[in-house]
Length: 357
Image (cartoon, rainbow, N blue to C red):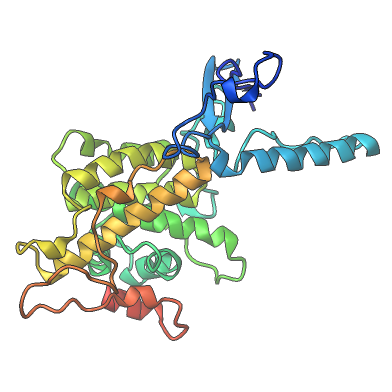
């Protein structure tokens, strides 16, 4: 792992006290206006990596200074005890994969899965069962879909059904690239969740063609959205990859992808409440709201984790919450409450999630 050195902030712009011999009332105070006080106090931590000749920044909101304080105390205790153990880098926060990887020794194209987790099938392999696809995706719909309901679950189930009717060797030819990106994200997240669920019953290995082989392949799968018009499906595909990266603690990559997501969100008007426009059906309104608030929450999560400025400002949006519509809806149209947001109810099962999504 490449070591990083802290770059201290310049102190040339900070006023000093005393030593000028002038009475206090005659001094010129170098301070911000009262309306701006507190807005430009971000210091954060700028780090220099000599091996890659690059600098990186992490903001104070990430908790980096607390982490450094804790590591300093731990290292001081180890030095007194003459402990040979090496402490982690004090200049890192959880999820900063840019500071952990060295492309010369640990390429990001390395396979993510263990041999017992995936199976490499031949092109002429027989069809897979629809029930297997449901079982492989169970963790995603149980744990992730309620909190981030940007996908239309019946559409994903329809894709599962379509995949079960064709040989695995033809999946990439028959299934559209954006649809396949969403399917791979769902199954990849579920497959990774198995590692944290030791009591989960043993399942069959997932075909490698249905999951992302590496982080690079995940990001490359949505590259086409940069050169094609923005659509709801395109945005869903990119968000699904971002959520996969978040689930794997690849926050830097997810944050970079978030810049694309925010621009796409603005381009198709998701930051405006869909109830205000007569062209949207009830189903369109619900899906647009679900997709927007997922983008919003992931943006807040990543910016908080890395201590970076927000991508979406509250002043730029007017999308209402699901249980607090403030705009007049069309006559005769009643927006049903989204049952997914009652996932704290212990009686809600995964089958109900799929039926009501």
